[in-house]
Length: 249
Ligand SMILES: Nc1ncnc2c1ncn2[C@@H]1O[C@H](COP(=O)(O)OP(=O)(O)OP(=O)(O)O)[C@@H](O)[C@H]1O
Ligand SMILES: [Mg+2]
Image (tube, rainbow, N blue to C red; front, side, top):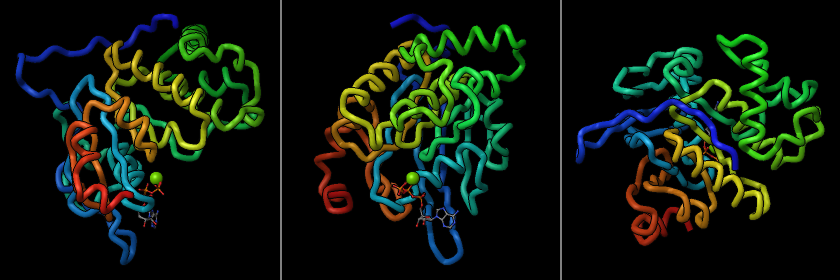
């Protein structure tokens, strides 16, 4: 795997928890339906943090609120200590947050390279192409460079989405089900890449359903059920929690 330059991680005093993201009591309703009910969580800088929960438990809504795509009805979001609760997606992006979507948003009538270059910001075309090539190499998908978005398999799309989100050099990545619907071999490759990104200083916050992956990858795990955080902690401890077993299995 090639090396990749990312923003250097910030250092903090030993023993002091340094959270890149803090969500405090966030609520969201859609009509009569409560999607999030005073949910609170923290994501430690440099960690891989996971969220699991049954279908409809509010996971994507949480990400949409953090990413500025949806305003919460109540509560606060802080990124790097700054209140971003009322920020839109572009402002949150400038705060260093990148994201991938549960349903791919790649342009099908552009090549993979064009998909990446199209979202580059503040870079010359030459720089953008160079960054895109570097990312495709890093994720071992350089061979897909000239394929159309529409030609990609489901798993290839997941990897290209990750590459595209990395174009903007985020310090925090939100990944909505990066492992869903892909074979275990590709899942393992994505795990390796995410781990390499973390070693390069990126913080990763992801949603998934696969207990196997979550147990293997996460430093800290949250469980959402009916819009509430019902458990948090080290993945093994969370799995052993009877409340989780009841809500989740
Ligand atoms: N834009 C919307 N309009 C109306 N209801 C919505 C909207 N977005 C989400 N919901 C509802 O809010 C609840 C939480 O949805 P959300 O997509 O956050 O769940 P999820 O945990 O991501 O589920 P999944 O595992 O299926 O992706 C669900 O009941 C869903 O139907
Ligand atoms: Mg979802």
